[in-house]
Image (cartoon, rainbow, N blue to C red; front, side):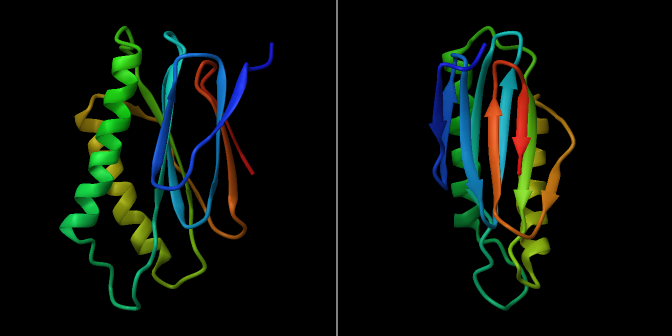
Length: 150
C-alpha cells in the first residue's frame, strides 16, 4: 500500500505526521533528523542547515545553538503531542557535507548537539549517514520506519 501523501520539509523547518505519509527534503550542507515510533506509526523530519559562515575555525554561537535546540525540542514535543502513546522513539540522522574545508567540522558540531539532545530525550539513535558530493534527496516514511537517500 502506498502512502496517502507526500510532505515537503523546508530548511530550518520540521513536519510531523501521524498518518501514512512520506516526508521529503533535499539536503545541501544540512542535516535531516528523522524521528519515529513505528508502533504508533507517527514521525517527524527536521531539516537543519549546517552552513560554514566564515573561513575562521568553527565557533557555534550561543544564538545558533539555542535556535537549533529549540527547533529540535519543538519537533519532538509536537510529535509527542500528536502521538502521546509513542514510547519507543528512534531517530535516523542523515547529513550532507558542503564542498568546504571546514564542512566536516561544522557538521560534526551540529551532529554532537543533536546526539546529546536525542540521548537526553530518551530517543534511540540509529547509525548516522554522512556524505558529501551532490545534494542528497531524503524520503522518510515514519509509519514504516523507512528511509531512502540519494
